[in-house]
Structures are given as C-alpha cells and as structure tokens.
Length: 369
Image (cartoon, rainbow, N blue to C red; front, side, top):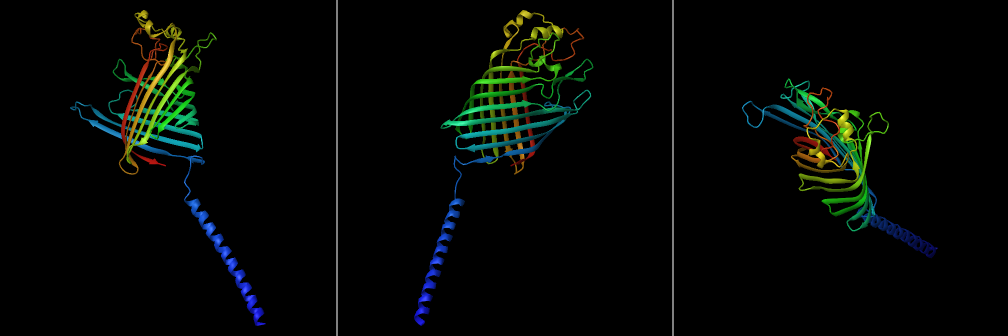
C-alpha cells in the first residue's frame, strides 16, 4: 500500500513539475515576446501617419513722436496663423499634405479716410504631394496646390482732398491659383527638398469681374464683353523647400519656386484698353513688353520665415516674401486723367509685370502639436 502511495505521489509530483515547467516556459516566451515588441523600432516599411502643426497669435506695436526721423505716429498689427500637416509613409510611398492660413490687421493713427484699421495679411494655401520612391533620395511625384485670400484687399492712395481712398485689388478667389504637376522630387537630406516638373498646369481664377483684366483673364467669345473665370497655362515648374530646426529654439523655413508657361497668356489687353478708355502717350514704346496681344505667363516667388522660441509657447517671428508675376498688371502711368470713366486706380488690362513684397516682424504666442 505504501509503495502504491509512493508511486502515486511520484507520478503526481512529476505531472505537477512538468506542468510547472511548461507554464514557466510559456511565461518566459511571453516575456521575451513582449520585450521584443517593446524594443521594436519603426522601419521604413512600417505604416505611420504624422500630424504636426501649430496655431498662434502675433502682435507688434510702434510709436514715433513728431520729432523722430524714423517715423511718426503710432501703429499696431495683430495676425493669427494656423498650420496643419498630415504626412504618410509606407515603404516606397510618401504622401504629404498641408494647410496654412494667415490673417491680420494693422492700426495707425496716420491713416486717413473712412477706416483706421486695415487688413495687412490675408492668405491660405492647401497643398498635397504624392511620391513613389524610385531610387535613394529620389521620388516620382505628383503635386497639387491651391492658394488664395479670404476677404477683399484694397490699395490706398491720397485723393484731391489728401484723404486715403480705397481701391479694390483682390477678393476671395480673385485671384486664386492652382497647380498640378508631375515630376521628380529630390531629397538629398532632411533640410532640403527640390521638386522639378517639365509637365505642369497652372490655373488662375478670378471670380470678381471688376478685377478680371488685372489678372490677365481672357474674353469670352459671346460678344458681350464678359471675361472667363479661369485661365490655364501649361509649362514647367520648380520648387525648393528648406524646413528645419537650426537649434532647439530657432526654426528656419525657405521656399523658392518658379513657373514658365509654354503656351501664351493674356490675350485681351487691346480690348481692355479700349473698353476702359486707357490711352498711351506712345504705344510703340511698349512694344518690347508684349508679343502682339499676348505674352508668356511666368512667375517666381521667394519666401523666408525665421521663428525663435523665447519660452515654450512665446516666439519672435520674421516673415518676408517677394513675388514677380508677369501675368498680373500694375498701375499704368500713361492714363488720360481727364477721363472720368476710369474709376479703378489699377488701369485694367495692360499686361505689365507686378512686383509684390511684404515683410512682418512680430512677437507672439504659438502652440505646436
């Protein structure tokens, strides 16, 4: 009996030991598996999304007394900005999306006329770029973007009473620009991206008929003198972007882009000159600027931004932009001033390149996510 009990005890002990050993082995395997998963690093073949962005408010104030040679009076500016990004990577696939918007006001006691608060910054841009990796640092890419402004923009000039008069120069989707490009994206390092496209389409929209000729819109063939809402140009496009942190407190952003149209743009300046009663002292002197009634559409733009963190959420920002667009127009000095029918300071329809420049330095708060 004792032998049977001893044998039964040994058997039970063996089974228990085996079970315990099996359980221990499983626990070890689970622990090792968990450890491996926790130490796993993301690879280029892994799927992931990133959603960086920032939102902020900037302000600037200045005051000059009557004896100051650098300026006079007081002024203040306030602008808000929003930047959203959605970036996707998986293996050889790259897809980057962004939305940027800025809007601001300026106040000065030196403004004359009906308003002492004026818009000084207004723009939004939506962009998307899809790329397939062809080689190291090289992607086949498709790029699309859209940019315009939210509200009406005015140019101000003194009238005969020495008061500022406002002249409409822009509106929502007047103008707006959209591009669709197929090309090569070169990323030599994390600081620079260069995109080049020999096949690009640029669309210029102008939904405000009062501004149509200012942005080179063509006439409709309906005999009513109406303008088309869209102008299409096919050409080459290039874009270089540098976007990185110089230090933990200083961020650098630079954009240089250019477009040249293969097809002709601006077909209606003679009609616009006639319809708006604009006259030249010597029309022949302008023949070198146009090819008949047409010119090649092209533009170049350079933008620079520097942002320095003072604290975690307080920053000092410097932003500037220079743009030259041959398809847009500027005020023509050769206007018959006695003609009362010319009501817009921007004399419509004469295709002369317009240089646009703005600069802003401000102290503000921003939240990055």
